Image (cartoon, rainbow, N blue to C red; front, side, top):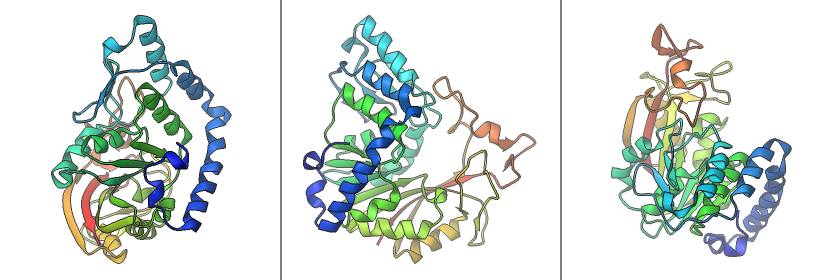
Length: 322
């Protein structure tokens, strides 16, 4: 996080009460970076703080930050050790000074599905809700955005992003340790908001959709990726505990249920982009994410169900406007 005076979106916050609250939330977030459980990640960032690379690009499947020739052998060894401190990498792929990182999620597949509808972000102020390590932020900036604000409360992801930014500082990318519940403080700021893989992790998805509506400028766009379930009825599944091995899953809607959420939140234009079962090629374990992943959380005898007995996940992609 950079100081407010240096942040490209800060002058767009006109409400003094919202400014004061954002100041408070920033100060409240800082101590989370110093928690003992993140000592390994903090040390990793510090170990490569002196390294710099010359270029970056985000217009290919892998976000490229530097080239192998930018560093010497000793620097490469330090960088690789630092990158390994952030295993498991959830979002990617990345190519960092020649080190290829195949993350658990093929995030490039998601971006390619959205891209024909995004087309361009030229000159826009964009929000990436739940930005994780910043993979999509680089893709958004490469698509022409003027400023990209990432919302991500997890300290580990903030440190991961800091490591990447130390290698090649990119002022137009701004990581804020905020959650989607804070987006309404950015009233009328964003031309485009991406809310990817977030709604079903919260107890009030309609309320969050309304907050994002407040943060959009006139004729702004909201791109949604939401995990859901198959079915024709406008209903949502609330699992008793874990769902496909994951905690923190509250509401998994059908397509018609998700549409009802969106319309009741005030949006009038809905464009469907993609809807199909989540594949085990898109989310899986890799060398850089040696974890139990989707293949292990589907019923081995019936992959249409999770190991808990629920309907297997589908992914729904939409573009909506007010």
